[in-house]
Image (cartoon, rainbow, N blue to C red; front, side, top):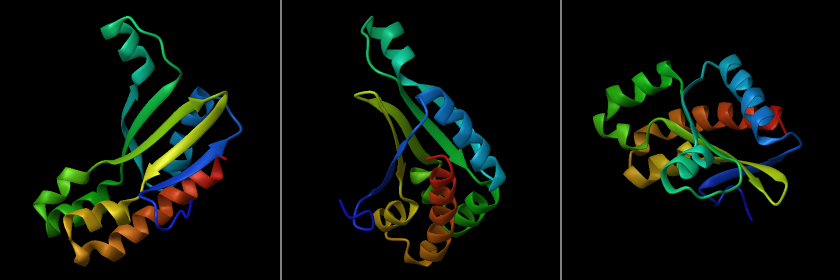
Length: 132
């Protein structure tokens, strides 16, 4: 799949899900991003439905300085904030997938945020690439 046409940037990690999340959190912090929430979907499904599933984590990540710039430009940008990264097990392989900020901004038709979205996306891709 052509990564530039896709709404996601996907990579495979050599580490298990938990270690991948730890490493990614550290790499994000180096770039000024914090993890606002770490949603353990496997745990929630088990607690709420009593069903089992593979490891699946959703990270809500944010760079306050970038978020402030985007919100100052368009209050509605909160619909696509914070940025989402999923880390999950797929047949014994850890997958990391980022919802690309450039595609998210396209959905809202905020072309004036294109350069900001590219900057954020580049930094998030660097963090993902550093852990795979």
